[in-house]
Length: 163
Image (tube, rainbow, N blue to C red; front, side, top):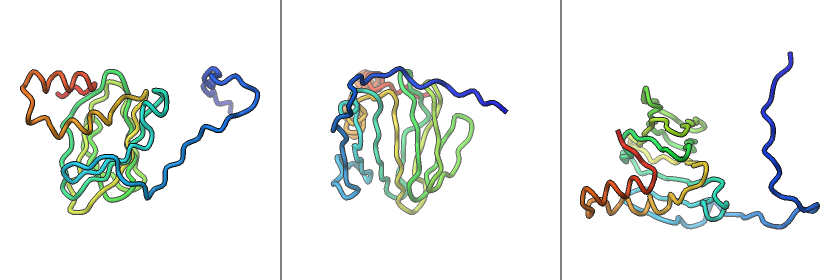
């Protein structure tokens, strides 16, 4: 049986020798941002990956809310549960995801997430291509201080469209 595999992307690095450019971040590094029981670790930002992707470790306290159903017009999003249990919405149904479970949301895909359990939970969130999500994470704590028009502009600027 012959399988058809997609082609690799076109080369973007053209030197004959590799370079020293990798970046290591220890699991014990302090979080980059903490707000309302949720801790954010900015593992790879759009700045550090030249816009290729953004990868964030998010640690949510017990019974932490999350965003309601929404979609993105410019980026896909993926969730990988590290510990605890997260409620993930795939556009049709809510599932209880536990360590090792993964949800991929293509561009335009409806989704939502939250920690409804009495225990903390941790997950990786991947955005591709990269976007300045750290500005979004840090800004959501200030939404109550914004007018309706300012709030709408904030969500549109951060590619978050709620239904």
